[in-house]
Length: 344
Image (cartoon, rainbow, N blue to C red):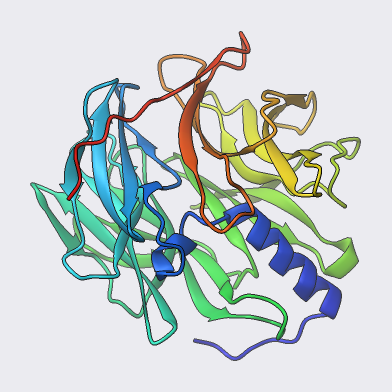
């Protein structure tokens, strides 16, 4: 871990608040403080558009389950040590392999380890000391791309600790050789997506203090050239500035789905909705009006539908996650009801 860098107080407090508001409690439930039992965030959608792999928490410990349609969910992989959780699954293009993150804490030190599940068994791909926050496959299945943090700390005594100094890495799954894709030491990085064999995107914070804002960076891995995508300057939300969370490219790469503040509750809590915009940031439309916390959009491959995670207890101690399917063309939405097996 690298040494702490100084930041302005405003930047410290605002970024801490943003992180708390956006990430919610899906992963913090693994820290043993809430006793959470229920669906986790960020389910992975298989190529058939009918199967999902998702984390399910039982007393703060998450295992990976799989379900197709309305079938009863099937246990895929469960941690063999108490207090550990399997979260943020990603499915390979051939639907045979699942990458995920093993999350736990020891003596108040957090760990997030890159893992893989194939042939009915799970194993680590990187050591415990390498802090991984997200993982996804390349479209050809040859590489794993992931976000790695070199610093987990807080920048103020009034803020929570979070991963910082982040970069994109990839691993060749045949040779197991790892290489850095970026060298930015970013303060914040999330929403990693691989567009094709040469292009990746991620969300980051650009600028300093009052001048900063959230953007989506689109990077050509080979040339190093990058494109910055953000909502048009005319886009306004109830927050002080657009938060632009979970920016996700559509299959044709012409549109971006993202979450942002659509309204506030009676007690002032931000309520996140799903928005869509053109790749150039124009023509922004609000897709949902659910007055909940809608996040982590996943596009279907064979239809215009989008899978999202909805936390109906956002900003409360214990989350209540549901998975919903939205159709931005018709405005229809329905819950993907999960039939869980009887748990011991």
